[in-house]
Image (cartoon, rainbow over all chains, first blue to last red; front, side, top):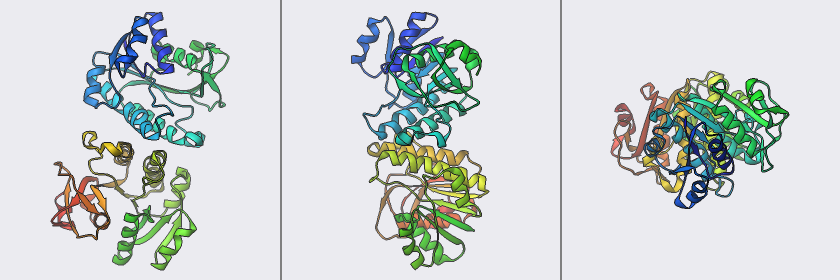
Length: 216
Length: 216
């Protein structure tokens, strides 16, 4: 599958891009915002395409044309403030979902947040972020795309262990998960058709990724 | 119709509440956030109910139970920052829409923003506000409620003239409109079944409100 990694220059995005490249099963393209971000990916032999989530749906449609899958790992982050959370994490995601639909992309994988679907379990300190993720996820579920929504717990920079715990039916305990493991899960989902139309929480655990995904 | 004005203590909300009270056709209740806001409405003989848009859907359902209509004029305003725009203007609206649905409320009138439905016409300076309004409107359109979405141009505090211009099919020019006229339009929509399932832009113009609404 020709796969576009949106937010490729982010921490999860870099892991995903590198793993897909190393695995070699899919053609991977990193969506980046500007020329300065290009060197990193070129040094790894990864193709890039320059586009911005502030662009129009029509423009993003041209970006995503010809792709089979999108992995959306973009987020404005805490440095730019909640106005950009609205414009990137919510509206940017919604535009990319629409663009993927009209461009005929089939598959869409989304990095969301632990329990984004349950308001009572939102982290009150970043409730605005949860609002954005919640509505972006809803847009994706309502779309025609074969979605997978991965809702990780607290993201940490430790090396991945490859061992996780997932929760879709029952609510699992709150926990953390290394960004590298989130990336591993995304790549595994891309390879696993049974994860289509699924949405699940993700924390560190003691199951191999593929085994955990089998139980969804 | 027993009508709940959400955001009753805001500028448009106060106009709406007072007009409904003076008109005397409908039972009007002002939804306010705290006891301190009560005096103003009691002095006008308007009933109040205390609730907060940060409350849960379940709690808001209890608030809205027994009402026939909701007029949503709430907004966090520029003073509290974009995080509250996400939590009130978007998520607060979405929760109230859901609460109204499950409580069996039929009618829902929303104050949105000029061209909130067209990203290319958003005001770039407050694009994050437009994102919130856009997604709140979408939630309402997708609901089972008999909606009317009023999308006013630049809000000003001049006295109302009772003369407006509305646009639903064609895009009308950008303009301003006194908050009092926005309130007049909302009250007229409540009385006019033909405005159900309609969404329109609103600026000052030269038509009487009822005539303008007839042309939607």
